[in-house]
Length: 289
Image (cartoon, rainbow, N blue to C red):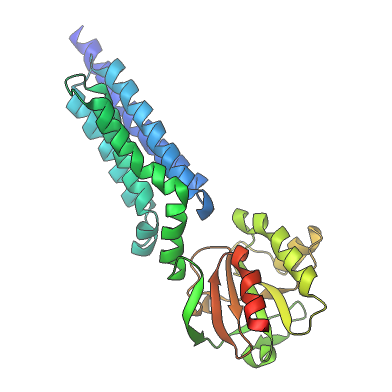
């Protein structure tokens, strides 16, 4: 009987580690579009609360509750170290990491009937991911990635760059001088980029007859890309906005770390906006006046 309990305890430990790690990984993958990160943090909190409560209620016969708690927290911490390629990325997704840990803690508190105000404490912990879902997370990511929460750039910076069009012609800053230029930075396997392309197409169609405004999709090259795939993939979807081939240097110089990112250059070639496409129209109108 003791051997059977030990085996069950080992299997339960593996299940706790695997399930907790998988939930964290699933939620972060779901949140590749940063507009979903608030929802992802909330969903992750709820799933980990339910999972931890389940293991507490069903597994306490085989494992001490403190060990169940330790294993769940260890799985989250392990995921944090395994999923963070850089300090910048870790900072960007920090609210998700905190939500994961709070979800485990909330599950443990809710399951402990010895805590008199366990429902109150669980509800208080729930407030953190709840408020993240109310656009607080979006503002946080915007701040980390774009340096602001609105997309407005206070210090207009001139960034020299070179890109190539479909005919391999090299274009640089001077080729755009005197015009308002919208640059949509993207890469081929970027799901959120394709979601936003219809909006870019509408913007292109609205200003295609305006010689003072130009709209481009600037591609980030990836190792698996085929020659000219960036142009062909856009044509296959019947989009008509022009595509430019960028380089990693261009992405680094513009400080692009999230995709898609929209950059608007004013008539002098200075960066006047950096953020999401939803804020571009207002910027164009102000620069046109």
